[in-house]
Length: 230
Figure 1 (cartoon, rainbow, N blue to C red):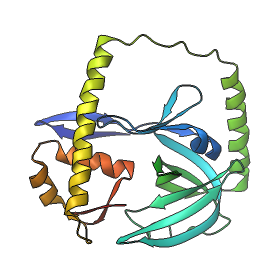
Figure 2: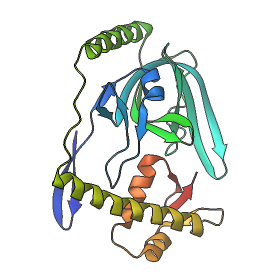
Figure 3: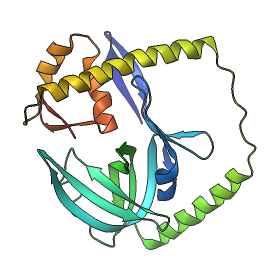
Figure 4: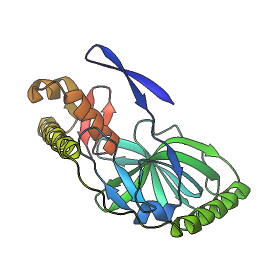
């Protein structure tokens, strides 16, 4: 799916990341990488594959509405036979309340890491059945065997363009961390006002920094215009 976004008065085409079919154990054991700049975070799986969106099938073990300070969210735990992982929905906690224990579901979402916990921010949850789960595990097993036969990738030479890109990314990361600190400073218990964050930061990329923090799960919008650190 493609979206159009306005950048400096011009439209820029944004490509939605591919949702890779993975097992839960791959999400849990792969290296989690926080990116520089506005690029999405990802897990590094199957050698050198950068996976920022996942497609998982599992059985529901629990479905709870939970509260963490001022933040309410839906917490669903699923298991696919290789491991179990939580699905956390902060934006609309009631969206998946109809999902029942023992349901087999297909999930498309973004892998996230907070502290020592890995979880998924779900975008789509769809009920399926045991037959599709078994088919998925067979498919993943075949993919794993195929991957094991591939030759290891050689280390690539770092180009001048990559060095420039890295330096630009580090600058953007610094601004993101600054916005995070401002939100933390302005939050007196009911969340930091978005307009106040913009005023205090004083640089034009504030909205992009807030978007990055929201995507990473570092902050949450507890209500319109109010940002809070988890």
